[in-house]
Image 1: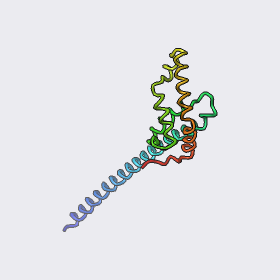
Image 2 (image 1 turned 30 degrees about the vertical axis):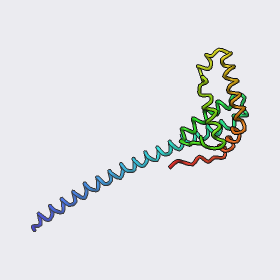
Image 3 (image 1 turned 90 degrees about the horizontal axis):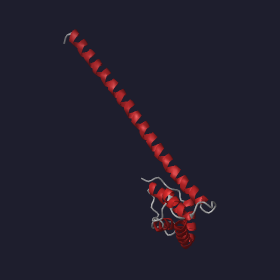
Image 4 (image 1 turned 60 degrees about the vertical axis):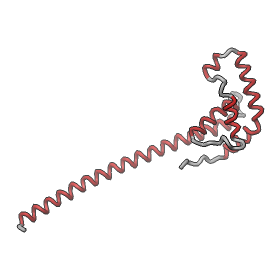
Length: 156
């Protein structure tokens, strides 16, 4: 093999190595960016999850301390937050009371529809909600203690 051919082979090999190094570095940067996005996504999911858990705890702590927050409203909100967290307590001995109260009051209008109701209809629904709350009160209180103590582990 001549010296010129040998030098050309070395130059070609060096060019292949340089191009390979470039593409490897580029792929490493892409992988780092992908990992950073995955980490940011996981962090966002964890923060949103924690917000829901905190909301449940705030509702539970306020339900008997705040005259404006009824067990019915708390149950509706807590049940929806538990659904968002993919936690199902519908078969739990005491926590299921939140699910039951929410189910028994689904037909009652909320928000603007509630405000548009005549006073006598609101009174009728209020009495119905009070009756359901009274029937479930002990289980709601026990469920409150269970949920306040629950650690809400991350799903797999």
